[in-house]
Length: 286
Ligand SMILES: *[C@@H]1O[C@H](CO)[C@@H](O)[C@H](O)[C@H]1NC(C)=O
Ligand SMILES: *[C@@H]1O[C@H](CO)[C@@H](O)[C@H](O)[C@H]1NC(C)=O
Ligand SMILES: *[C@@H]1O[C@H](CO)[C@@H](O)[C@H](O)[C@H]1NC(C)=O
Ligand SMILES: *[C@@H]1O[C@H](CO)[C@@H](O)[C@H](O)[C@H]1NC(C)=O
Ligand SMILES: *[C@@H]1O[C@H](CO)[C@@H](O)[C@H](O)[C@H]1NC(C)=O
Ligand SMILES: *[C@@H]1O[C@H](CO)[C@@H](O)[C@H](O)[C@H]1NC(C)=O
Ligand SMILES: *[C@@H]1O[C@H](CO)[C@@H](O)[C@H](O)[C@H]1NC(C)=O
Image (tube, rainbow, N blue to C red; front, side, top):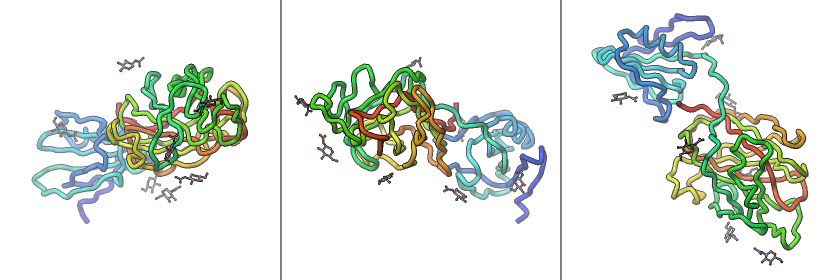
C-alpha cells in the first residue's frame, strides 16, 4: 500500500495523512469550506487546509491547480482511487482539534410553534391564545432564538388554562421547528435558558430531530430523524433567567437544514411549559 504515505509536516498534534491518486466524495455536499483555484502545489493546498481552523480534509488536483477544503473527516465520505495521470491527491489532518461549535440561529428565524406532537409523528400547529394548543401572543416561539433571557416561549399543550387545567402534562408534547437561515449545519449540542418564573414549568427531557426536506414537508413526522432524546440540561434548576448545563450530542455526523425540538417532560405541575432560550451549537460553512 505505497499510496498511503504518512508525513508529519507540521506540529506533532496535527499529523497529515496523504493519499495519492484518490478523490474524496463527502457524504454531505454542505461540507465544502472553499474551492480555490490557482494553487500551484500540493504543499500549498496542505498549507491552506492547515491554516483554515475548520478544514480537516482537502483534495488537490495538480492538473486544474484546484484545492478544495472540507469540514469533514475522512470517515465522513468515501475515497475513490484514480489513475496516476489524473494527478489528484487527498490529505487529512488526523487529529486536528476543531474550534468549539458555535450558535447557528439568527435573531429573526421563522419559527413554527407546535403541540400534540412527539418525535416521529406529525406536527400540529400552535396559535396564539390561552387555551389548548396555544401560546400567549407575546410569549411566542420566536423568543427562544432572540438571544434574550428576558423573553420566553410558553405552550399550554393539551391543557385549557381558561378551564383551569394545571398539571405536569400541561405543555408536554409541544415545541417548535425551524429551517435555519444559515442553512445546513452539523449539530453538536445545545443549551436551554430558563424563563422568569416558576421552576415547575421548566422542561426536563426534550427530543431533537433533524430534516433536509422542503418546508412543505415539515409537518409530516416521516420527514424527521431523531438526533437526541434526553435531558435538556435543567435537571438541576440553575435559577431564573439562567443558562442550564450544555448538552453534547456525541457522534452526530448528519447535517440538517431544519430542526424540530419537542418537550418530552416537564419538572412539575403548572399550566404550561416555559423556556427563554435554546442555543443550538453546531458546525457550519460560512
Ligand atoms: C494523532 O493521531 C495519531 C494516530 O492517528 C496518534 O498516534 C497521535 O498520538 C495523535 N497525536 C495527538 C497529539 O493526539
Ligand atoms: C469547484 O469549482 C468548480 C468550478 O466552479 C466546480 O466545477 C466544482 O464542482 C467545484 N467542486 C466542489 C467540490 O465544489
Ligand atoms: C432577517 O431576515 C431577512 C431575510 O428574510 C434578512 O434579509 C435580514 O438581513 C435579517 N435581519 C437580521 C437582523 O438578521
Ligand atoms: C392530536 O394528534 C393525534 C395524532 O397523534 C390526532 O389524531 C388528533 O386529532 C390531534 N388532536 C388535535 C386536537 O389536533
Ligand atoms: C377552554 O375552556 C373554556 C372555559 O371552559 C371554554 O370556553 C373553551 O371552549 C375551552 N377551549 C377549548 C379549546 O376546549
Ligand atoms: C424519549 O425518551 C423518553 C424517556 O425519557 C421515552 O419515553 C420516549 O419514548 C423516547 N422517545 C423516543 C422517540 O425515543
Ligand atoms: C462514538 O463513537 C466512538 C467511535 O466510533 C465510540 O467508541 C463511542 O462509543 C461512540 N459514543 C457514543 C455515545 O455513541
